[in-house]
Image 1 (cartoon, one colour):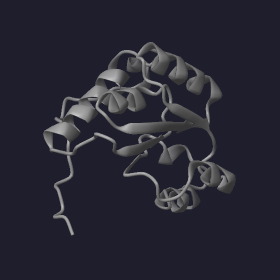
Image 2 (cartoon, rainbow, N blue to C red):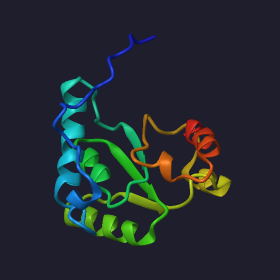
Image 3 (cartoon, rainbow, N blue to C red):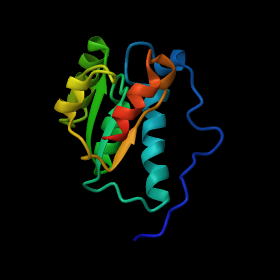
Image 4 (tube, rainbow, N blue to C red):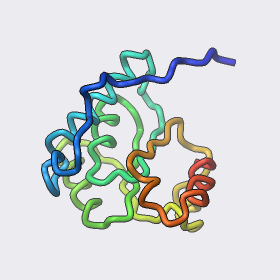
Length: 145
């Protein structure tokens, strides 16, 4: 059994942006800065991202998927917004980061058959819960991830 690690925290001034600060419908600006900062905070806490399997549930434009992939993780992104996923795929290609982006609803059991159960080392769920019609059901599904 490995000893527990402290939960990484970012400095107070990092990533406190609103959606308006994210550059509109692009994965640029503060959102990508936050994603890159998140990857560096994990590295500072000696969390080795190399070959770590990660899924970003609610990935929007894919900034965290790209940043964590560039840090060595094996990432996938999921979002219900098909337009956001098109932007995410384009952003990933521009950054030579060929990752899977899936469209789906966290409450849909068919999604979890496609995503798979118990295959991720790290599950990101940022700014998502408050948008879910059945958060308890969705979180039960996420826990199997």
